Image (tube, rainbow over all chains, first blue to last red):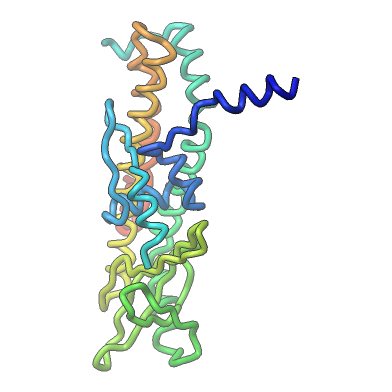
Length: 70
Length: 189
């Protein structure tokens, strides 16, 4: 059994790093409500792009930049 | 598409399902609309209170240093994260809406959203900006609902469902505006 589990762990694909996040995910990552995310987008503090059908997506880089900026 | 037609059973089911799937968005949206509406409804009283606070207090008020390095004296809170503040510049009082946004990382963003010498105008600009944010939010939720319905009900016409949610959100925003507008003119629109 142990050997089988080890095999499963070894063959599992590495976690894929996400490139962009939805408003809900961004809110959760920053620890703020949805309104705050839209406010940041409206003020240009958080750059968002529009996906198919027009929904907002925020890139991982933008979130990291906001979390790290002083 | 004829919107006078009664929605089909499947469209009604989809509407119930969308309401559940987007419960958090819809609930937070409603709370934000109510918050803006509260400020608009009480704008004259809030403006007076802030003005009095700025006149009467000198250095007793809490000092907030914003990210741009300016210092503001806190007058009153508009919400958990927004407050009316003031500072004295060349003998004149300048008012500002300051937002203090604590992030999960421990960092706290402190920003001047807008400022001016007339506190009532500062508040009006703030609520007007908030309505723009609500419109941005509405558009995004409409897009999310469209996407959700297309994936869940491929090939089905669900425009009536997405449009009904957009209409409700637009109505909530316009009520926010209309109520404040009628208040300022002493009549119902």
